[in-house]
Image 1 (cartoon, rainbow, N blue to C red):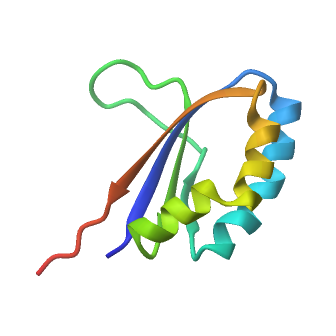
Image 2 (cartoon, rainbow, N blue to C red):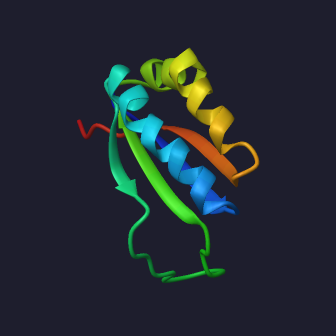
Length: 98
């Protein structure tokens, strides 16, 4: 079953954050993941206005998503994000209709 990582990111240093963004695609792909959403235009339809950058990653399984997030590849990228953005990442099981 696929799994997703939902990220909400408040970028505080765009120049430094761009360095993080350069490393993440390879780390994600190494664990079978792909971007579903990577920033882009957004509009809040209900509730408090979403002002953060929104990212959605898809992985083949919950376990692979966790392996990615804890991997040395991603931790190296994450070290570039520290101080350049405040972030929240949530791992969610996907849904396969029966």
